[in-house]
Image 1: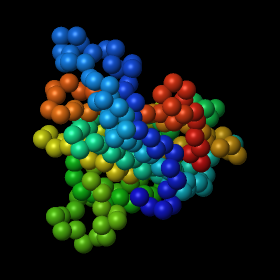
Image 2 (image 1 turned 45 degrees about the vertical axis):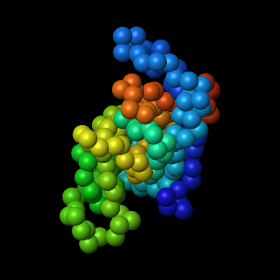
Image 3 (image 1 turned 90 degrees about the vertical axis):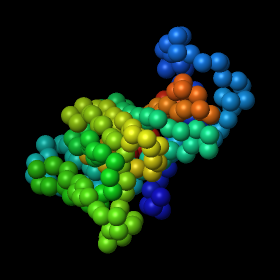
Length: 227
């Protein structure tokens, strides 16, 4: 991870109690032992870090409001006997009054190597180049990234959702670079709560184990500063 990124969330996952209660009893496997639960909490970890926010100057911005691009870095770390099958990031801007998401990247992509380059136009449109590269790209490796299957939602609202799925027959790759463009009242910090939910399979079990991590802890969400 780039040294310019500041950690916002760095913790071991908890078992997600909300998702656990929704398990189909007909599909349930033997109850996990305390030892297994301890292992899952300790060795399955998640991290989200924030890069340097970039304020945007444009005549398209409304009076009294400003736009900032926030780079984020998302990483999953799995125990050797666990495999991530799905992960979701939720960035909730509710702690910042009247803040909305104007653009997100990535949005909907397939697993392929891409070069990323951000550009913000005069009309407040975030443009990220996503160009396929060959097996031996000539560009620097630092700017070549691999995205899994991604679905995003939240543009125009105060919550951003990114869902990550592995490519068929593969595991879910870690280390993702994300971008948010946020419009908010000028002169105030942009605060948000971060939540990550994930599902892992363990030791060949078919059952998917739901995991949860959140800024401030699973029971008491706490906002962090995005810009």
